[in-house]
Image 1: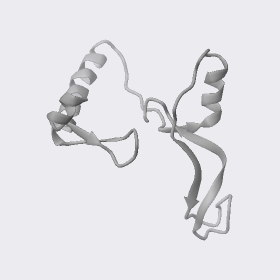
Image 2: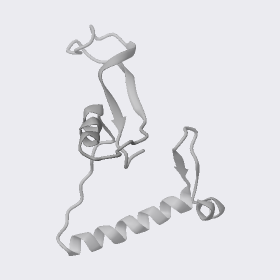
Image 3: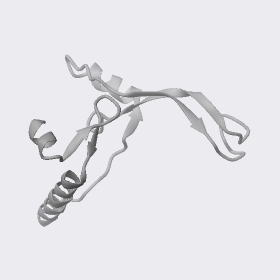
Image 4: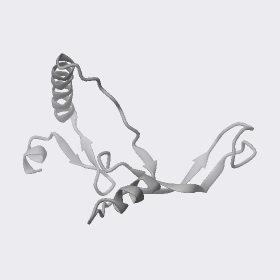
Length: 111
């Protein structure tokens, strides 16, 4: 991390465990992404994106069949909704800090 900091590629973010990728770091990321994308496609592979938030139940399922599995995760327990009449939790008005029906976590690779 010292090299990354000294080269001004990234800085610590405002939330514990996050980082701000600075312009030189982002340029490096774009170069690597383009290079790897080209190499992957040469071998017939395809890109895919996965969600940043997943239900906590997915993590609990993983813990049940991986001995010693104890991730440190960011957990989302509340949210807000500004939606139309079809909103499942209200009449379409802005609802502040509603508890979620089930907790969501940032995927370990995204956190």
